Amino acid sequence: MLQVRRECSRNINIRIMKDRSSLALENRAAVMIKKEKGL
Picture 1 (tube, rainbow, N blue to C red):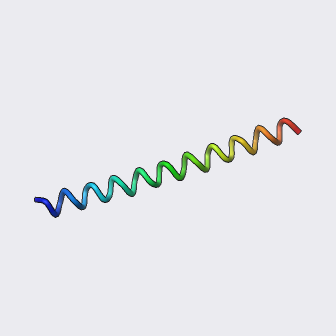
Picture 2: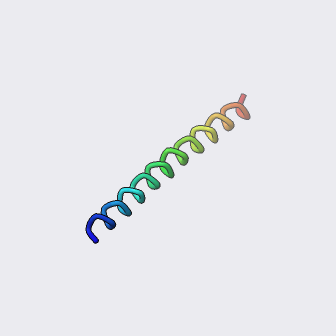
């Protein structure tokens, strides 16, 4: 049981890290689009 729980938590952590990286990329893209519109 403990082994399974550990695997699940690891998968959740990986998913959270992926979500954070994708959010950072989206924010960066939005900033670049704003700069281009400003020019």
